[in-house]
Image (cartoon, rainbow, N blue to C red; front, side):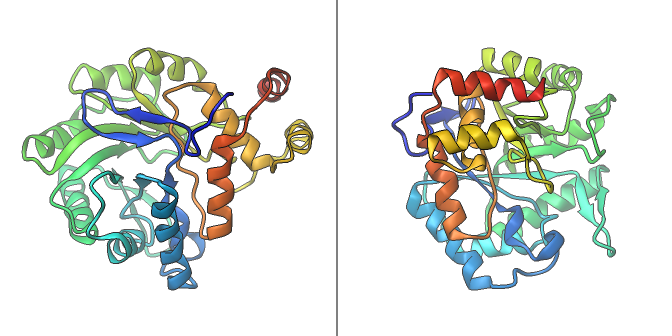
Length: 289
């Protein structure tokens, strides 16, 4: 990957005026342990958001389920009024149980209530992009027409500007596109978890964004001797290499790695400038095999 842009270049969501750097920020880790309650150090969490802006990050991914409500409230307290170039993406379709569980919330009333909470806590009149998030552990086939109908109506009302999908199958993407414009898909994907290879290529041809969640492996970090060897050769960390590989994988991939540390945020951003030689790419491609 030849890349002189410290944030991985720019991407425009299809059919929109929204242009973002390919290296963004995911706010999940700003909440307390297990994504529950306030951060241990609220000022340190706010410092991460301020540093993200200072580094030029303009794509922020969040959810009312983080905390719940905590990350959205912190984003507003720290960044509002937002810079004109800042794009905020949130998710609808899930809620937190009192036992900290993650539960589906996909009825029309729940989706509308979730959106109103987002607008209130973020201090917005409309959300730039809202992803309909399916809450199964892995993508499961099934119609999305009832849930999408609510988002389509919210878009007509001017409360949602653009619609995306999260944790869905390729078939569900096709079904959704028959109903409305889809600007992004957010699914589980990384060096070792590559079930969406074909979907990524299809979306790339359509210039639709693909946003991998758990780009660094999820709650269990990627462990690979090959990844470590490539990182050592390049003088980088394994996680920086994993992020650089994702940017190389396809031009429509946007990254939203999360962190609660300013130092770690800077490491993630530095990954966007990492050059991967052809031999390194070949070695990394082989990990999933």
